[in-house]
Structure formats: structure tokens, C-alpha cells
Length: 237
Image (cartoon, rainbow, N blue to C red; front, side, top):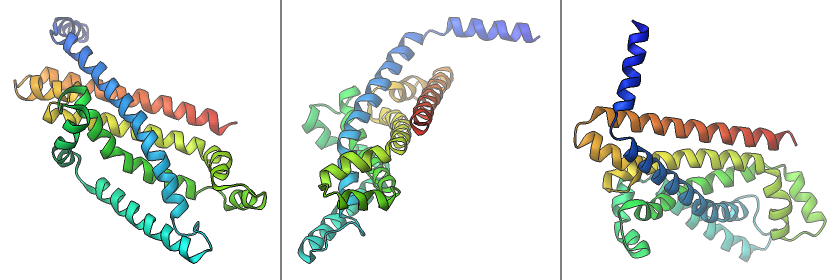
């Protein structure tokens, strides 16, 4: 009975006619995730550093500068919290005019990248801020004692000390982007989510829906394994 069941499953897999579409959609998802992750790091990392440097406990002793830093932190923190609290599907719809202005379309891979970056960059920035807060304050005091500038302190002390944690944050962000990219399929964003909506939901094709979910699960597991391995290697150095 088990052998017969295994043969039936193999035959069903071989006879599955949507493998080309699954492969193309998987490639689109990887492109969306990779490009969005790159732009998220480029935007979220500096934003997280600014949040850390202007946050409580790291402000200038000069009252005027400290007041400016407090205002900057309040504005940035509020904007980050607003974008983080907005449901991504609603954010996708609200950003349609912005996306069309930036890339000329709201469909496909190109149309998905701007809302993905805008939706996930604040999340990554907050992770960066929290990681930098965990750096030993003695390291910062040593940098100040040696006369290091803020830029030198960030590049020579803060980022190297928090590198394993930053890689972990990148891993978490990449996994979140995979899920967000699937949600973008609701408005024709391309990738596995779009395939699941068009073929699985609209055409009532349960097999396509199950396969797309399985591929997404595999992608998440691979990203998590790779991220964990890199974090372990850096932690042992």
C-alpha cells in the first residue's frame, strides 16, 4: 500500500502541468526578495543608526544640539512606528500612486519592490537600533576617550561589535520579505503569491495553492539555515 501511494504521488508530481509557472514565479519571488532586501539594508541601516545616535542616552551635552536630536528622534520614531503598524495589504494599496511614480507600474516584480522596501525598512531600522543599544557602553566610552568621531565610532566599534546580530536581523527581514512578497500577489505583484491568487484561488486549483505554499516554506527554511550558519561563524571568531 505504501509503495502504491508513493508511486501515485510521484506520478501526480510528474503529471503536474504548472511546474514551468512555479519555476518562473519562484525566480520572480527571489528577485523581489533580493532587490527589496538590498534597498532595505541601504535605507534601514542608516535610519537605525540615526535613531540610535539621537535616542535617549546618546545625545550631545549641548542643550541646543540635544534639543534638535530629541526632535529628530521623535519625528523619525513616529514615522517608523506608523509604517510598522500599517497592515501591509493596506499599505500596498495606499502606495499605488507612489509606486507608479517611482517605477512607472504597480504590477509585476518592479511594481512590488517599492512597497516592499517602504513596508519593511522601518522594521529593519528598529531592529538595528535595538541591536546597537546592546553594545557595551564601555566600547563607546573608549572611542570617546581616544577622540574618535561619531562616524569612526559607528564604523570601527558599533557595527563590528553588533555584526552577528545584524546578520540575524537581515535573516529575519529576508524571511519577512518572502511573506510580504507573497501578499503583494493580491494586487498583481508577481511571484508565488500572484500565482497562488490567479491559479490557486481564482481558478480553484488546490494543487497549485499547496505547491506554492510548499515552495515558500522551503525558501524560508533555506534562508533561515543560511542566516544561522553565518551568525554562528561570525560569533566564533
